[in-house]
Length: 279
Ligand code: GLN
Image (cartoon, rainbow, N blue to C red; front, side):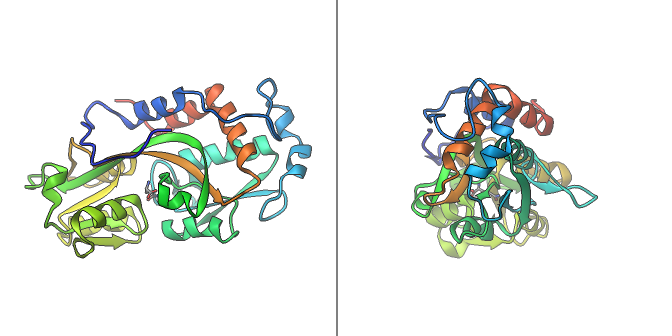
């Protein structure tokens, strides 16, 4: 697993999120597929109710997923109020392999992280970055995508690199790595935590903050929808996304096995391709 590269000053130009997701999916993980739901040969077998019977979940027969459906293209709602996105479809595919029905609980990001820790949800999928601090309080599956912390500024801003954030007001989402890194690097007093990315971007539009630090994939969507905003070519950090679970969750092996199959048979990549167009 890749380490978080803090302030790695990666040139984001040319590195599309899709390309990064591909990189993340390319390597085979070290997890063993020995237990429960998966044998490499047969994904059919995983979909039996026998597989579900072996798994203990918060609600019997269901895979309960906590998320924050305001993080496109990983999770968002359709006009009809249904959930969609890369995490949503990936969770759906995992649930099918485990013989469980997917149930999605939508809440703020920080609440979604707590939800698995408190045993209210089986998994949290919300573009969740793996960090050592989070690993102390929850378990993570193998990684399924790479994320990048990007910096959004108004066109013509004098902020042109991560270092220029010093002394500026930075908008972030509460409880996210963007918030944590910026508070560490530039001081709590300079960082404003909003409920979600959209509110942070609205604050940037209104001039209440000078920049927003947020994951690259939603950043692209927010910038596309808000003329006058741009993403800096230099990004702030590179991260791994994974599925969060309670510490010691009995689901971990089954989820990793299902994820491995979805990577191997191209399902995961086709889900990513559906939502992220390569440039
Ligand atoms: N990847 C970031 C984190 O885990 C943000 C995720 C999100 O806002 N949904 O902190």
